[in-house]
Structures are given as C-alpha cells and as structure tokens.
Amino acid sequence: MVSNPHASYDGAMSVKSQPIIAVRDVRASARWYAHILGSEETTGSPPSDHDHIYRRIYVGGELVLQLHAWDEEDHPNLTGRDRAPVGHGVLIWFEVDDYTAAAARARGVGADVIEEGINPNGSFPEMWLHDPDGYVVVLAGPDGSADPEPA
Image (tube, rainbow, N blue to C red; front, side):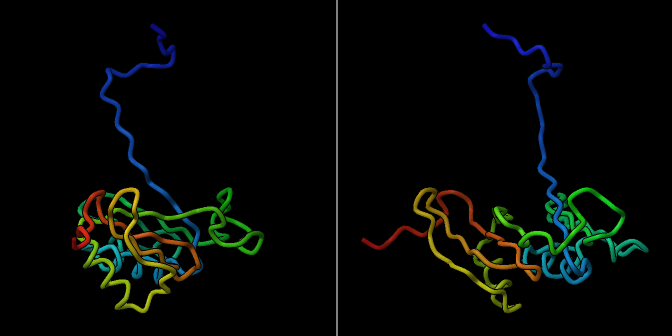
C-alpha cells in the first residue's frame, strides 16, 4: 500500500470550485449571471462600495462564480485585458437543476447562443452561449436528464 505523505485529513475531503473571471463591467455582468443562473439576489451579492470592482454570484446559498474588473487592484492575470482573446481555452460550465428555466432566461435576455442540443455522452440538454464579455458559458442539465427520444 502506498501512503500519501501529504495526507493530513481523515478521509472526508471537501473541495468547492470558486472560479473568478475578469470582466469589463462588473455590475452588468453580475446582473446577467444572476439572472441567467436564477440567483435569489438580482445582482449576485448585496451591494457594497466595492461592487464596481468585485462581485460574487450565489445560487441556493452557494458561491458559483466571482467577477472582478480588469486592471483593478493589480491582481496577477486580471490585468492586460487586450493581451489575449477573452476566455481562450476556458468554458464556464454550470449544471443547473432546471435546464428549461435557465435556457428560457438566457433566450429572454437575448444571449448569443452558440449551440444547443442533447449531449450524447451524458444524455443531458446543454446550451452554449457567450456572456457579455465573450466568455463561453455552458448551461447543462444533470446527467441523464434529457427526454428520451420517441421510439
């Protein structure tokens, strides 16, 4: 048996993803994501004197995304907005309990839908779209949630 010399936990490890993306207009992006994802807070998180630079998006009490203004506060990799294409190589993927409602909200705000269909590998519906900054966002239903095709 191989032991992990760095293991100091009791086997009950917990990890939560807390992605952060740089955006041009934090408040507008926060409203967009909050609406699309069905956040209870219409602007993602309560207003503050810092909300033009940074916002958190909560859904069901869980942090799902952080937004930070480009070129503010000198954070590494959140500077030089024009140095590379926005989101090159990045997909911001959200599994949503109610895909139909999330897709309807996306269409309702006129989101730029890239493609929509059933993922054959997991048998779930998915919609690929661009956010206001050009990042590719995927809304996906849970695995196996696609309606079976008629016989």
